[in-house]
Length: 538
Ligand code: XMP
Image (cartoon, rainbow, N blue to C red; front, side):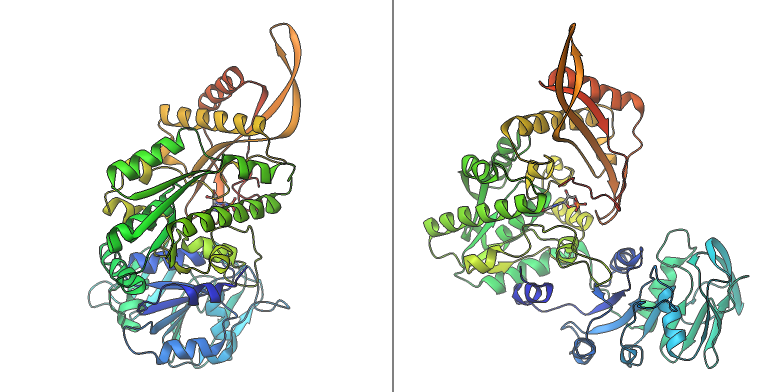
């Protein structure tokens, strides 16, 4: 599998946007910082803290409008600066002539590197604290008119404390933290988290950093993203280039297909593969939506048999993903050969896919799952990649889709994994387990819709494994499968929690599953969060 950098290099040649970079030290809010900056209109990337200094230098020396790095934000971290092996970036980065904002651990790292005293775990603060601050560029607009000082409530989550920082301008303190905000040269640090909603005016503080201190231009909005992207696809594919796109009917591949279709019209051919792992009614919906609503060239391939044959007796989750990936390659190869002269493959890879498949954004976390749409395919197919939404988070993809006129049932539908129902059948994928998983999932979704919960949750489905449990049917004892219902809430799928559904809704799901899905005796509810669990069981 190619590493993340080679994937980035292989993506379509387009002019990069100027950006702010968040260096990820493994903090729980790292993605949130990126999201907030993008919401404020500045393109922002999340990078691992170990990134080589040369990469930064290239970004800093770039011409305006070609991917210039305008500022760096150092994230929080679960580590203490004093811990052996705690994450640290090159001190050269901190000394670069570019504005830096350290948040929590990031602030402590700056202080520690520049001679400040970071006390260990003596005066931790968790939750709300009152920050007393002085007027400065970072807190601009936060004081009462004419006043040199102000107070706001901020959100804290730290064990270590910056106790003293000679040479720095101390911009704020709280009862437990003598240095809660500082500036030294063009480095700023805040012990609190401006990215969380619980910090009053946190958004304004980030706005000040982006626009007043870094001098960023507003360059990130969904409408301009669409226009820019369409132009970029045109440039990358050229006047003659032909593209195929694996369309699954999910929001990511659908949005990708629409963007490419807008750019190059019928030089795009979408390939929709029925791999036997689809949801109830999925095939009909996809064909109907794309052929009838969008008038796109769509090739339908019935490949159920070869996928299911390939999966027979394969029990291991990662091995199943590999089989599915390989089968997709074969089908695409065959279809590309039939079409002839195909140069590009469009994929619906999104930002979290890239990060999770690459082993997260830093070495402090490991690869979770091999999302099959990242890597593998293009190498073997010798096709160049077009990944127009690879910089977007899921809800940004939804905004793009809405803007492009995608029907609400596709925009609002829950994400569905590339390996389809195989991600929800534990152990070997058999016809019977697939049927149970498909029928039970359909009931779970229907009951959520009936009870007004569908749009409030991230994903909802049924899981089935090899375990059987005793039941009574009529007067007779019978053995049947155990179906587990999984309903989660999440923002970006990087973390998730189970949804506290009312018992009545769970009861109606359970009753319908045992009554309507043949061979099921027990229904359970998955109450694990991510981490430690993942959303899909396989
Ligand atoms: P996990 O199970 O890793 O899933 O917590 C996070 C999100 O990603 C989806 N998912 C996938 N999507 N190919 C995909 O396109 C995959 O191989 C894959 N595996 C998981 C999952 O449904 C959830 O939304």
